[in-house]
Length: 426
Image (tube, rainbow, N blue to C red; front, side, top):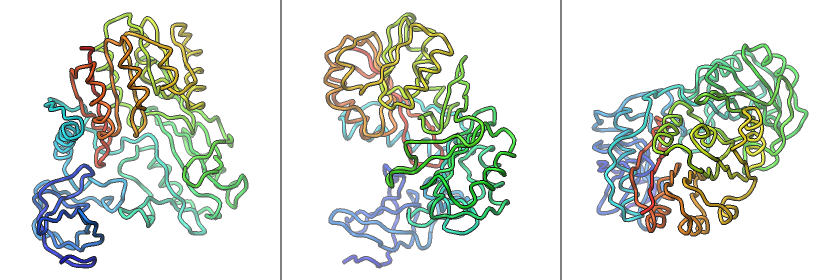
């Protein structure tokens, strides 16, 4: 009988939804992070439940041909970096198909996956934690999620972020780690950077020295101080500009989007723009489009040149204000931006095309119930969670049929699953 602490030898028979190896031991399932299907390993049992357990790899006896080594594989944010990129693409297609079939009972064969095949240095937004040391050092959590590992570079962050990480590492600034908790970076394709210091208080040891040093870095467009007022959230509700402006511009299509330190924007712009272009190609000209959960309006603005009217619905006030600034700059009279919850306002609207890009928990049930009664000819569903997507598709396919399911490889070396589903009215 298995107990916590036992060491067993097992072979992974599959990679699960989270990219973990699946080992069967006497008909009992053990999930093992970092193990690839086909590999044999010595495994230490760390947790046991009624139906499954978890373990850690002590030694790999037989390695997969798909395994690669990387110094950042110890980081929790790179949970699949030990697997060759082509294997990651195949895994994402399979898991997306299986999840939709299992939850929605829809058997759909996926034909292709969107990717620019850039596997490294693609993230334009990164948050690092301040280590509990007198001189400023930044870190990321390990795979256990309990321990911080010092970093002066990060394989997924873009070149400008890594330049600033190295700069901070080389300039020993005396700080109070009990007050300065995180530093966030936003960059753009022009290699400009917006830096946000996240602290518990407006005043902390090292603030002036750190600000003076960061201002000297080329292409720093702004430095802000964000007051952390909720232990469950990295960013607080209020930011103060210390240098430059709390704004960075990001080219998308023929326009420039505006992004602040608190507004939502896509983390891998070149790849998500491929998805936006696919959506645009599928929509006939001069359609009335509703963009729900619109954020700062990147999808709606991208589609604005082919639409007769665009209505964006967003409840995050920072994103709404940013979208209104963009609309005014571009003088788009046929774009309307509504500050409201999508599930409430959708009851009052109708259109030809609906685009939804909801948070990880998917669409609200009342939103779907309303959509099923409307006259939308097409729905484009961008999802960041395959399970909630499958749940919602089970309801949406009562009135719509699936034209295509397209996995989007936004985040190589992670188990994040982004998907675009195109639906047409039956």
